[in-house]
Amino acid sequence: MDNSEQNIIKACQQGNLQDFGVLYDQYIKKIYNFIYFRTQHKETAEDLTSQTFLKALEKINRYSDKLGAFSSWLYQIARNTVIDYWRTLKKTKNIDDVWGLSDNYDVPKDLDTKIQLEKISESLRLLNVEQREIIIMRVWDGLAYREIAEITRKSEAALKMIFSRTINKLREQNALGLIILLLTINY
Image 1 (spheres, rainbow, N blue to C red):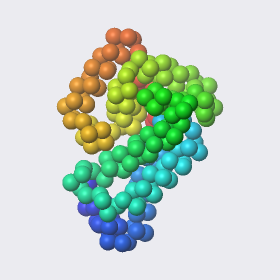
Image 2 (image 1 turned 45 degrees about the vertical axis):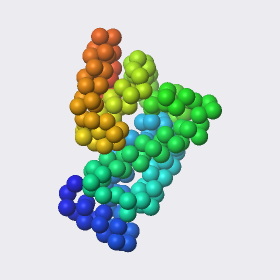
Image 3 (image 1 turned 60 degrees about the horizontal axis):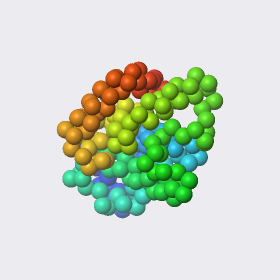
């Protein structure tokens, strides 16, 4: 974390909550994308993003750089907010199967994107929940292993091993090329 971010956090912790806007501006797009990919619904993603930042603002005094990077702390709040959201809908969806590419919400208007998302969805269904989450955070969200480790509370070595084995599994099933589509859709 750079000094300016750390200074902003300290200012917020001392009661200058208006400084939180700088952190909001810095992370809003990344957190929104993180949540949108897991809900595929614009309004839901907007609501959950707002909830995430509200929770972060309310809990800013609990943050310490000893917990890890601020971005990882924020992603962890976002992840938990999404999990809580899906738990409220658990009557109709299995929380373990919810990982991002929903078919029954906002369907992308662009037909090519829709077809690509369907192919990616099929490939990701080959994976278990843990594998999907790590692939999505690493490839789609572009998070470093260190950040994923802080979010999931797993070691970097374990994450690298899971990622490597998952890529090999996708390669064996000729599905690796579809995961690369994640990168082209995301950028």
